[in-house]
Length: 122
Image (tube, rainbow, N blue to C red; front, side, top):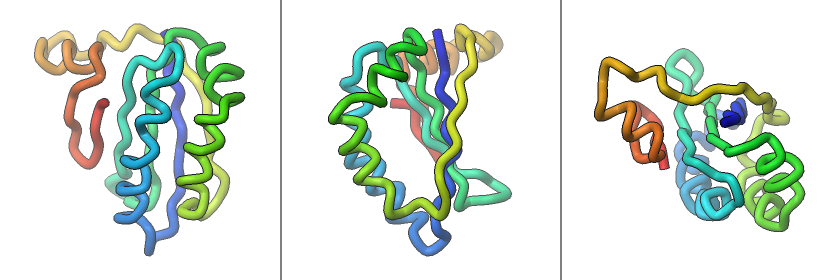
């Protein structure tokens, strides 16, 4: 299991519009091979910085997989005008089992259906 962490800096005046634009292109991400769910959340201290966390079965599913696809090009085209600078992306390994004390949250995270403050697992 790999997690893509994308730091998405958005122009302050476009923060609300960005959330709507992301919702429009999210189905392109969701149908990618190896996709296992995502969370998009705004920073508390820096609300113009969004954090996108995507669960992938393997690094290859994200890159070169999704990143080399037409869906990725369309996904980024739908979001690019909102960025105040280039997004930063990195990957971590893990199983995502850190919610042991809250069975409902743990289950929701594994299936990609948890709601979070200022963000959504899908």
